[in-house]
Amino acid sequence: MSHLLSISIGPVQDFIAAARRTADLYAGSQILQKLSKAVAKHLTSNHAELIFPADENADGANKILAEVEGDPKALAEGAKKAAQEALEHLWKKTIESLPESYQSQIDQARAQEQLRSFLEFYAAWVPLPDEEKYPQARRTVERLLAGRKALRDFAPTQQSDDGVPKSPLDPSRAAVIDPRRWAEASVRLPDGSYRPLRIKPTEQLDAISLLKRCYGVLNSDKVVDTRTMARRSWRPEAEPDERYGEDDDHIREPQPYFVILVADGDRMGELIGRQDDPEAHRALSKTLDDFAREAQKIVLEYRGFMVYSGGDDVLAFLPVNQAIACAKDLSKEFRHRVKGTLSAGVAIVHYREPLSISLKNAKEAEKAAKNGGRDALAVALHTRGGIPTTVVRRWDNLRWLELLQSFAQGDLTQGLAYELRELGREWQPEMNVAYLQAEAERILGRKERKNLRLPLFESRQDLLTYADQLVIARFLSGIKTEEKPEVSRA
Image (cartoon, rainbow, N blue to C red):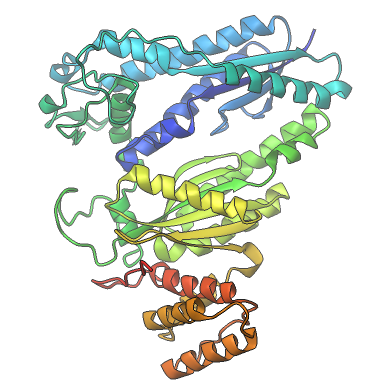
């Protein structure tokens, strides 16, 4: 009898985001993809027909749906074993790139225990008597999988870690190295050269974090660091090997901000639910794979770095002055291919800000776009020490590009934004909005910016939002200056 088998592989978001360096972040996404592909390949090698993803080599599919024959429990157990073996093989192959003197310093017993307890693998299955019953069977199996994930497993990990420091990237795991002895540690690249791991004396790395660090450095030729991304707003050709100094020096960048973009398809559950049979679902899966591949091309066109692109999810780094245009093209491509809408969050962050905090800011921006009605772009400015400023607009009413053009033409100064903001704060709700518009026009006229036209304000809040856009637009313009305007704390 045929069964519909649904598998979830994790951890996902927290695992990927637990990173101190861009290479760590990239490594997290790549490792998860390798484990997911190992599961998909095990299923297809046992005559399962993949539905989502439709291709065993698809990137980013941490959730797998397949039509299987025979015993689904045995197949799920085999898939879990395949994922575990893939993780242990990746550990062995990656750690072998370390000099033997450092390999011998790793607490291998604790590392193996952490590798055995790392994987989150959940599976559920239901009979599929015929394809006419597919919609109902899919809803049932997804409900069962959600219930199984809610139960979770909390088996204790025997790490023999009494008195051993915990990992800063994952406090549930103890360190497997003494970082004070790893300051000079490096990995051997395929060309025979060595590249440093840059492990700080306080980085008590667990096995998974050490795997991510080594894997990321081994693949650092594919990674663009945050400093280089900030530099690309005024030097588009900048590459990671062009250094002004070491990562921890005090050299100031002329333009120290870059963008983290997070995008996600809207109401994807509803879209998937409308697929009446496996073939329609496979077609949607292939469409999402095509979008993911095209998204990578779009990000590269704007001199960005794609951290993760799987299905309807995108995580990318971009120069500040390319972020809006790139986000808009991603939205257009998603609408064209998937026939759905995309919500995106753009966080403007300092390249020296801890990566974990900057990623959280980008996630919150994406959430603001979703909460703002979906099919929208949220742009959040996070200056160092300043209060965040966020503006949410729908894709068909962004206003960003015209403001950036005004900055390029010299029609905008930072003073206009703050005067309009002060006007909006002082304006009382019962006062006529037409007078508000007239006063705003008077302020603009005093600035003598002849080529700039204010939009029609329908409310006091509309003016405040526009003033916030002016503040953010200066950062998005990527102007190369030593000093940036401070965002008001009021």
